[in-house]
Image 1: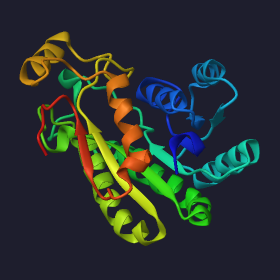
Image 2: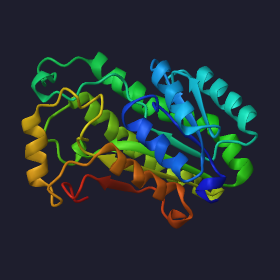
Image 3: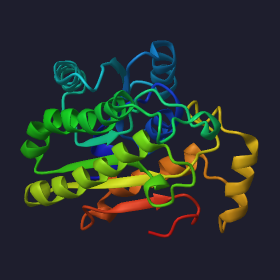
Image 4: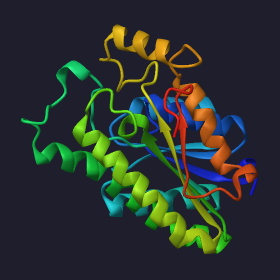
Length: 253
């Protein structure tokens, strides 16, 4: 299925990286569901910017009932089921290495919050979208990961553990759903310059990463978002269970 024929759900699309992913799909003619949790004003402004092929819908992706309602509303609005899900929503987190919780002080509540946001949220959206994907014998699931579990330059213990678990879920889902024409892949970025989540990052760290990267620059949200198009396009029809690192070559997986 070509991108311009698809209905794409982008979770956490009201701000940050999610906005750029939504714009990337809309630029290729896809219909886009802009999911948001609290960023109502920004999400609705983005929907207005993208026009009639975009719809902003509030839902907490950790709540399965809200996700089911989201998909029902979107399918009724666009007249077709969701074909691609981009699991981008992130539990509240600030990428400030100086303020991170360290090994001797971090509590399980921090891990639980990140696991709920990354793994539970992704499981909810996948399960809710599966009936529509099965009806089309086509589906694309794109999970947003991190290069930090391969290159933990800053030990964000809770965030990194949750993203590593999401990669495991990506690969087991790929094996489970492949026979039904549904692919499941992950896109892993490093620090992006800049998003709301990376706003607290010291400038010195951006400079350090740029110097260590072959492209001598820190990847932007728009550059990262472009890579999501590959996994939703016909060009990736034989690719599943993979983790593509999009960080300018900093980490070589």
